[in-house]
Amino acid sequence: MGFFDSDIVQHEAKQLFEDYQALIKLGSNYGKFDREGKKLFIEQMEAMMERYRIFMKRFELSEDFMAQMTIEQLKTQLSQFGVTPQQMFDQMHFTLQRMKAELGTQQ
Image (cartoon, helix red, strand yellow):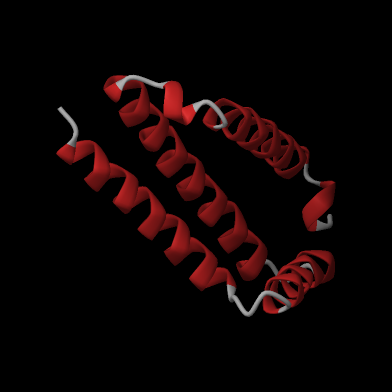
């Protein structure tokens, strides 16, 4: 069975995409959140990034041709912006850490 033929993989990919879209939509109002709302948003975004990182690692470890092609396509797309997948995750981590730090200075 191919990587993408798995019901589990398909469900997880769909759920990850839907959750990410909902979180991004919610984040468009980040500036209107109170301090606790901002903390909760940051925590949810960190959890989302961890889920995404694990999902991508499964692609990398799979021997399935389509999974490997997906990783190569992602690398190609990111390289057009001068970024590797690891740099993408690092930048998101840095952004979330900065958001946390800004909350630490707010009363």
